[in-house]
Length: 260
DNA sequence: TTTCATGTTCAGCA
DNA sequence: GTGCTGAACATGAA
Image (tube, rainbow, N blue to C red; front, top):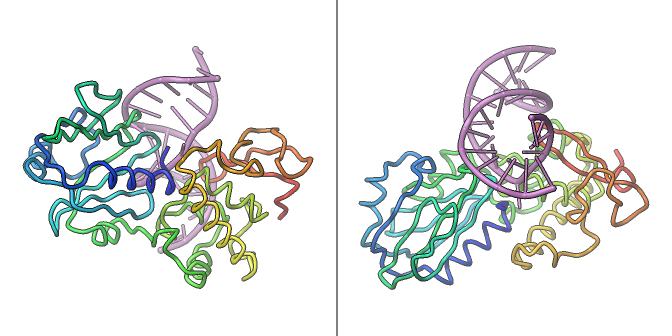
């Protein structure tokens, strides 16, 4: 379940569990998730080392194990990380770090759309991938400029990882709902005020979700996230939620709250 | 049995 | 080049 808030949660989870512990063994259960690195090279790079620090950019999570060596993870549509003791490995564990303490850290990724690999630095990786600035590390003026640099509908612009990194399908719907902007509204039709509202709601939605530690049921009842279903009742007005297909993804919005 | 799913990437088209 | 659509990737739930 990985958009920015979930990945941020995994980062904090790793910080709390897995730093400065010696990696006795690295186990690759599915080579499919390896990106640009062989199992052999990955094992050689990491075994005997310890994780030092973590950072996140958009939906990518980075963990250093020497000053210029970073392991990165991307979850795709499914997955998380799990830290546990003993031999009971979680289902769909694709890469496992065995610490000498007897604990393990597992990269869990059911659908195998996830990727892990190595890079010399998160910034280098981000520029190679064309990743934009992190959605929570962006000021209003740059947000406005970057959104305007992208034409077309506002929803795909929000989700474009080269414009800003971290927002996916679910949170883009939430941000647009709270900003009262229709997902098909063109970015060129948005004025400074619209973009400011969008920016403030983006920060609010993402930071509140980070705070609730991915427990969606703890998010306010006024949020769309609980009603992402065609013909569901809008949490704010009497309209019914509608489904729209935009850029190959299904989005949900309220035709009453979100006018064009 | 069919459709759909919190992502990314690529081909084809206007 | 830009934006949009559909498909592919792999697995499971409804």
